[in-house]
Image 1 (tube, rainbow, N blue to C red):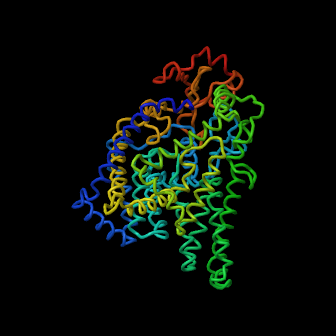
Image 2: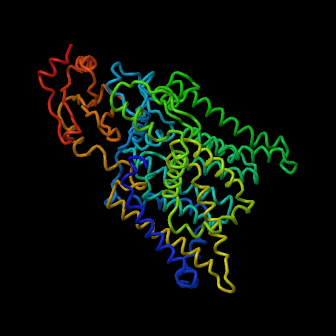
Length: 570
């Protein structure tokens, strides 16, 4: 397993305990399906009535997600960016909030070079801009995490809106509750800056718009379809493209069916609005690429892959010869750890597939969902959710074709996963053993165990912010907040030279800077060769220079000695 999964051992024990409890609950509810009837019937009636008021239910889900997470702030504080990806996303949000898509390359960019950021031809994040826009909105409101909170709340509500197009409102509401419990409170989607919710919103808008277009041909749903595709293109472009293939196929089939409305009507109300939105999105993406990479057809992430990566991106590819990098940490990362992830062997292929299966189920499911899996084959025959199944098939196939993946890469499938689960629960509820409605009890057990699992996850995250899949992935190996805050309070402008040992863990990176590096109170730089360091000292001659050695003592900095400065200055 990858090094950053080494501490997952106890969670497997917890998982099997939860599975054992879930099995006991299934048996109890199956043997006594009427157990708790006095409680369950009024609750089911209440939520059926609530979900029938669709607009009210939409806003209740949105507000419930926000209020629940805000209520947990005394126990679970807002996240801080820790991992490479998070810092890159936060940098993008800061740039957008300041009115920039990117910054010119710094003349001494090699000293600031860090993971998942481009430094030439512009200084920018490597990721698509949608998550950065969300964080920028949060920045403008006071904190980037506000953008995360709003996006996850919108995801819960959008899931409900989407599922209404495929099933009755009370079941759509249950699917949204599943998303809310698994992803909207204690998942790392809510408690980090990695993203996930934005692409989930895009997927929900796309799949929610299509059936409404088929039924009503209203222009607003065509506009929403185009916007959903645009969100996917700017958040998860690869997975979003695969996700949209069956949707595009379904739309084309419907347009040319004999029973469809006249072509002129479809052209004006469907084809034209979607085409306009997609053309505007293509123009924006081309402009964004041009401002960040200098090429309208080259995405920042593709540029980063071209410059730094010599390892396979897809499982059928082979590693290329290694190249030399500007610092030892990059050598350890690109020529060491990244190459160890996949060597093209059958064993490596099985391993990465199992890792993906474990990661996806750990984030999207819970042990109590096991019972719903038994009736999933019945869902495959439901014609109404056939489009959801096709989207699931295309997107998962793409995810399992790449070497490295994380659960939020599958974010467009969020509404699909919970829609299919709900449909499976509906089938489960109808099962009978003779005259005994065992399915009724099993379906209730699935929901009860969902609530119980959510409570357990809240407890885990409050106790351990580094909990896998709940907090950030490497939160236990991160920049101590109090130390950085103390540095920020130092008078005057500072330059901190970070000296790593050759064996430093590259996951614990310290060299991250703000969007406007030269205007920052603190500039973090790698200690490189004497010539590069001398240029840095001359460039920042009015800054106080400090030496920071995190592998020896990350709690303090020491002045760069006069002898060292004299040796390093030109």
